[in-house]
View 1 (cartoon, helix red, strand yellow):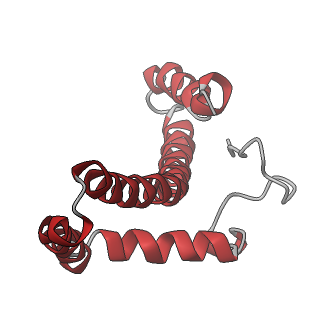
View 2 (view 1 turned 180 degrees about the vertical axis):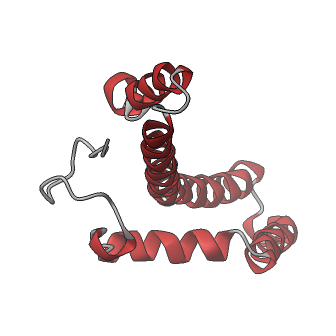
Length: 141
C-alpha cells in the first residue's frame, strides 16, 4: 500500500524529504516571519509600540485621531501576520499529515506481512489502508 497525495506529481513516489518541492520566496518569508513573531523580541516590539503610542496623545491632541493611529497600526500588523502564519500552519499541517501517512503505510505493510500468521490483522490492515488519505477525500481543503 503506497498512499499518494492527490496533488502528487511525481508518478506515485512516496513523499520523502528529497522529493518535496522547494519552498517559494513567499513560503521562506512566511516561515522567517513566523519564527520572528514567535520570539520574545516581537512581543517586546508590540509592547514598545503601545508604550510609545500612549504618551503620543500630547502631540496628537485629538482622542479620535490618537485611537485611530493605534487601531490602524495593530490592524495592519494583525492582518499581515494572519496571512503569513496561515501559510506556515498549512505547510506544517501538510508535513505532519505526510508523516502520519508514511507511518500508517509502513504499519499497514507490516500488518500485511503478519496477517498470514495472525489472520485478524487483515481486517485492521484494510481499515487502516482505507483511512489513509481520508483527509484528502473528506477534508475541507
